[in-house]
Length: 236
Length: 236
Image 1 (cartoon, rainbow over the protein chains, first blue to last red):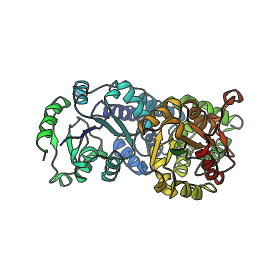
Image 2: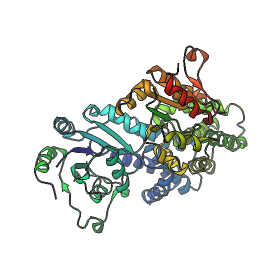
Image 3: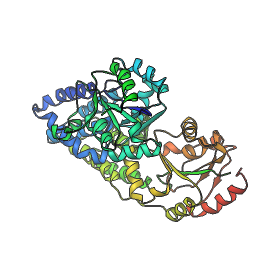
């Protein structure tokens, strides 16, 4: 019942969201001298959402949207040095140390002995490749898939490309929107490992979750035992 | 002798370089009121090169490097509206119409009947996927590979992943640095289709080319006949 286990990477195998929230905090400090205080987060989210169709996901997109938000909020008064600070924030994020989540290394090492493992992640190509390499976990994964978006269509295409049956495919990740719901929609299995922070874009409403059947575990340490159960009974 | 034919995309299947050179011209116009005239291209190239390890290739990277160059050249005097113009230039590039090169459609359609075809391109994931879709050529390609860089190691990994023999692999592209030399280095075959513009990063010295054995054609219209010859005699 389990042919292959796929993992999301950011905030599933290693911490990422703090990089964004720390950068947003620094961004708020940069804007304070311009008299900009409230609603920065909402404005930034609005710009990011509008820019998704151009820039997609990832840190470069985030940087361009921060710059655009700063220009908007300051009515163009943002100065060059502060724009450079935003670019430097992005470079800092891209070169930040890869900080594995608790249990990630042990669980991946253990499961890799029994199952083919895959990473499916979105964001900037170079950034994701670099983090996979620096994580030291890369050798445990048979395939690495960096995709521009995670939805039912992209999962279906990916499974077809690798000749995988949905019913034997298990996706493990922290995002209900990206790792769980679209996989269930194509007949796959999903394990949700909530992370302490969730980007607004990844949030789902209770209505969207109604009837969704997936497993939820507190941390990756609980995954090997869950997978052993899933190999016996189809998890439903 | 030909198991699979892989194509670069930008400036091989569709025009791209003019988007960059047009944006650079607009960028020069933006900087003129600040009294910045000469050496813009050199400065931008320097910033782009230094930023490659953070941002990789593609339009988002180009936009961030243009902004950084503008800040440097104006000593931070660039105003918010002009920074926004640079971001808008990038959005324009990302949504520009896909303009196929002469012979691309006919040649790809013809070769797809006889050989498995692949696209191997670098740049931003979403941008490349979107262009492949909008080109109308996507259905002729068995595989699409969007990579963060094209070098011997990335070609070797890609061939291994697809169980391809280097000697049966033919790469077709406009860049000697990215499409020809690294493929020859791992024992593959390469066809160079020069484009009228070459980004400084892709240029190679005569020394690097010494002894390199590859085919060169004037345009994609000449490819089917060349491939027919290559299927008989190994091209050397």
